[in-house]
Length: 119
Image (cartoon, rainbow, N blue to C red; front, side):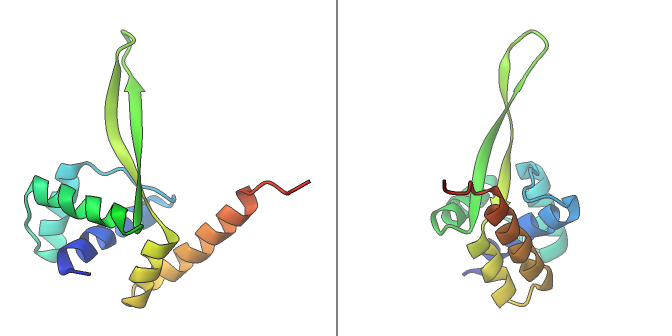
């Protein structure tokens, strides 16, 4: 995996960990600013979207569209939620990211508890 894709994955993971949930929804502008600020990776919006699309194709992240409704009833797009998959956390753990193992365990436990019991 190239440095830029790895940096994007780490960025999503760091925001997810800080939020304490299994997903995060930073804006593109926020992600580009954090990439430049913390990793020194300065890329364009189109390059960011290309790398994000590649991460989705590889099964490392999952993107969920979010919508909102204004007071007048109009529906609008909100920032999409991004979830790192177990495979994504495994890639991070293999590269030495310590909190990734904790997230794998939490995610497996959550997925195991949510499955319906066969009758």
